[in-house]
Length: 146
Image (cartoon, rainbow, N blue to C red):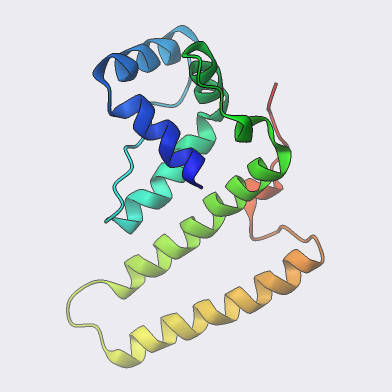
């Protein structure tokens, strides 16, 4: 998913690019706000980053092409499928992360959450092998790409 990080860093690390991208979103009347800046240390922001990038993928593609830096992955349906899977799975990982945080948690409660998540992983693997996307809502959505 280095293409996601590269695009976000290109837009967010340069003030002019960031401003121009925000203007593009306004011009397109995008319902989504700006991109979430990539911070490698914070896992929760990682999930948010993938979701926001997915929501703005068409706008990012247009902006990068306008800047003369086309991103071939944004035209690759297999890569986009991997991206939406990443969006879904990081949502579940973020939920687990939140369950494992907090003061005064008993080890048995933490272990129960981890074991439950392992069971979900096994179930999801079987479902994905059968092309059953019931637990992967983003992956299941029809594409609105133009």
